[in-house]
Image (cartoon, rainbow, N blue to C red):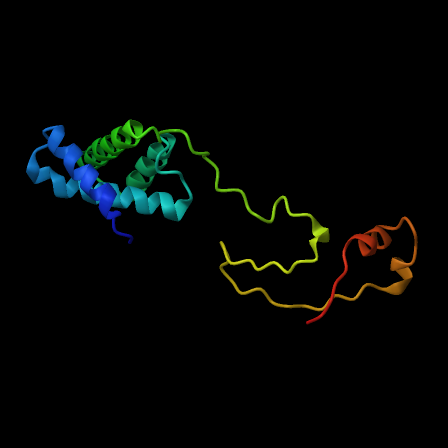
Length: 154
């Protein structure tokens, strides 16, 4: 589990003091913030979007957290949102994952591309050979494909 970034941790602790949150609760609130940030990272939610809180709360219910624990978590995350809102960050970032740099890349760049994000299994290299009879037929799907994509072995 990732630690809360030190600058955020310090801001959060200061905010807890400013809100007169009982000192004995500070550790619990920081724990819930850490769990929330970790949850958002692992499940690809934006931590500064308030809509992410409902997904986190649902996860806490699945994990059989008590109502008291769920209420603590909700209060802690709402305090985090107050910090984010004060910075002007709240609900400004897109909810979806960042755009893939490959999505808008034209096929004809001639550049090699390496994929690392989100892979759970290694990519196996495979040589592909188009049958000449299909490639040479103008207007066929394979003929069109051959004109767009060129495959090469390494």
